[in-house]
Image (cartoon, rainbow, N blue to C red; front, side, top):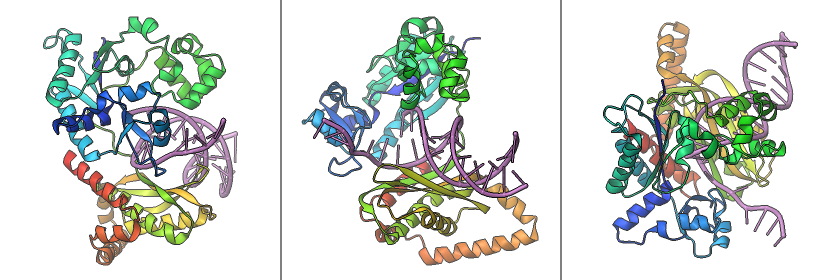
Length: 414
DNA sequence: ACTCAAATCTACA
DNA sequence: CTAACGTGTAGATTTGAGT
């Protein structure tokens, strides 16, 4: 039996949401002028995160440095991002979407899939229903969305990417040859720059070229797994279900680009400690422990280095994570100036599962007491005085604030 | 030759 | 003229050490 899937995508999400706030305050609508959400062009962390349609007409692209965008359009309005606002708008958007569908999957902050299969008695006309959802969002929340309609997630998502803004598109299987196959391979979901280069190098330029090629040829170019998946996508095949429950996180990571190069260990250690504290706190909130710690850094030539270690026992202690992160960093850093440093925790274990097994084993019980003692020691030493620690470390004052905002957001979800 | 872990690469919003 | 370039997460692929 055919499924019926909607994909709903907020048009220029961050910029639209910022515009809604401004319009409410009687300020000009950023959507009608060349504008973007982006960083400070004088700092090196400034890239374009979202852009208005007029900005797009100047050739400004998401991900490019703000300084470059300014050269393309000197009048470009640049607004810094505000995640607290985005979370609120996202929540309101998803609430409306969810009210229409038996099953909704949150795909990102501004995208959802709805599984509308079996709703034909309530919603006999899918296109009309899509317009209804889109118009309700525009009327109640003040921003526009695109809705893509098809029989699977891939096709629905491709459809929502057609002409913007404020549009409903279908991409049913019989429309694939006319609507999807003429598109460049790069437009296919999960097909990025590296794969594009390999395909066009072999003369495969459109999605239709891919679909008409032998699956084996695509696999030879892109690897077995990716080749299989992307060839199926090119043919419009995707059996993945719309999942209401988000997958459990497989890791937690944090990384920070600095305005000034890092050139000494003394500069690194407080940053590393704060980053360990941030990721460990996030992990503890999800009641997880990790058995793998890794540090990453980026040199001025944009080359990344990472170094990781496996722990004998899973941990969620900031101090233990920090000790490992510090060792990993010292082991791998040769002293080259750095622009970015990051910490990641992976190979997560369930905290509750771990605790159960601990109770059954005397030796482990002993160890657990020691862990608790260590934790108390850490609490005594550092307390919950995040602000004090933040001030030690953080010349730009940004890391801790962002982390607190994120934790707050996670709280609101629950 | 196999396997596990580590390191690197790719992709996406 | 070129180069410019954030953050968080996931998964695949490649590399390397040990057996």
